[in-house]
Image 1: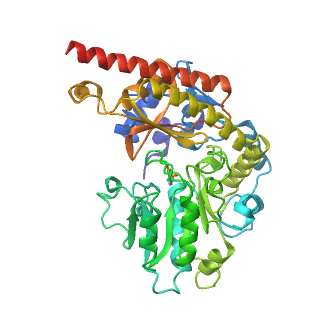
Image 2: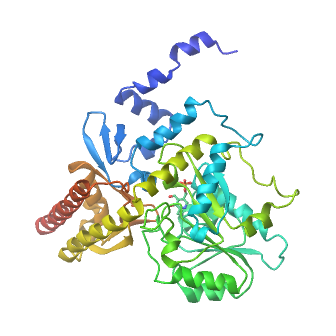
Amino acid sequence: MTNVKSLMSSFLTIDDALSLDGETTKALQLTHLNRLRTLDGHAKYFTRAQGCTFIDENGDKHLDMIGAVGVVTVGNNNEFVWSCLQKCFDSRQFMMGAISYHNVAAALAHNLSLLSPQGKLTKVGTATGGAEAIEGMIKMVKLATRTKPEKTHLLATLNAFHGKTSGAVSLGGKDKWRAYQQPTLANIDHIEYGSVTALENALSTGKYKAFVVEPIQGEGGIIVPPEGYLKAARALCDRYDTLLVVDEIQCGAARTGKFWCCEHDDIVPDCIVFAKGLSGGLVPFGGYLCSEALYEAAYGSLETCYHHTATYQENTLSAAAALGSLQFILEHDLCGMAQRKGEWMMQRLREVQQRYPEVIKEVRGKGLMIGVEFGKIPADQQAQFGEYYSAMIAGSMVENYRVQVNFTINNLAVFRFLPPLTISDEELAYGMKAFEESVAQVVNAVASATVNA
Ligand SMILES: Cc1ncc(COP(=O)(O)O)c(C=O)c1O
């Protein structure tokens, strides 16, 4: 048996952990966690976060323009969300599992159904993150359609991203993530994103259980589909008896100026999958909202009601963080903030684009979900500067201006802005100044390298 006394002499307590210095933290992380990911040239050690500000180990401040990739809608370490969690700690709530009713989860489900499009999605399933929520949705769709033998397949879109668990990767539309995961789930087809014709051609075969689609493709490069795409999808899914599922894990929770992005098209899907923006980034959370008919078709029998369970389902802390985030989003009109600030930002970015049309190919998005697509660096300079301008410009923003931005993982030509929706006008203005000056500096550096070559 391990000698506990000797083990405890090197064991780190929570007090040790919270006061680890930067060097030890990095050494432990590189030894025991994902080494290469952390070695990314711009990885920093942030020790505190508040609102839109990170503070690094040297006490320097950084502006958060990526919001933990769209998670921190309500700002980092939102005090109100913390206070909701604290109330659960203080009252020593029962936190776990299937053997009890859960007051906070029940209240959250009630609130989510009030907030659902037209109040029509009244059933909720919970998970610990986006990909697990997608898995739950896939299982529900399969169970709900088990009585329809002609429905054999799922339909998704090319370039889509739905997460990296096995089912979610299978549903995603990028070979890169499926490549070493064979066999992926069978019977999933992918069609061109945004094409109503492709959708009708596929659905008219009559074989699809569900069409799963992001209202705006996030990781694919902030791709906004043509106006009316979701409306057409709703009509076609109705015509061909196919469920319509929208993945709002990145674009939901007020990010695009409406609480749910699909509300821009004024539709009611059969199911909305959510995660990221719903728990303030403090506690893992995800899930789905769906119609009573869909839920009951899947789980409304004794035979199937336990076909999808998980240890942390309906967890009180997750539900409390989500409940607090929802209340904060509504009381502070974060939908309106996302819309107004997004419009201002988009205008600024397009002004820069007009000045550098050969460098910035497109600025696109909705609300505070904005992508900038960059052109390629001239071929003879790529060995020195990389393939796209995006990497150099992001690097300059991070290093020279201490502004955090991030790439979209399915499209390295695009980097995106997903700031907390609480970002102030001054912070936004600073972020745009950093962007503008970084573009100018990188363009000059590439041009002078070309002249000197
Ligand atoms: C649209 C979409 N779906 C699913 C996921 C997966 O979520 P998670 O990383 O929480 O598993 C993501 C994550 O970026 C996403 O953007």
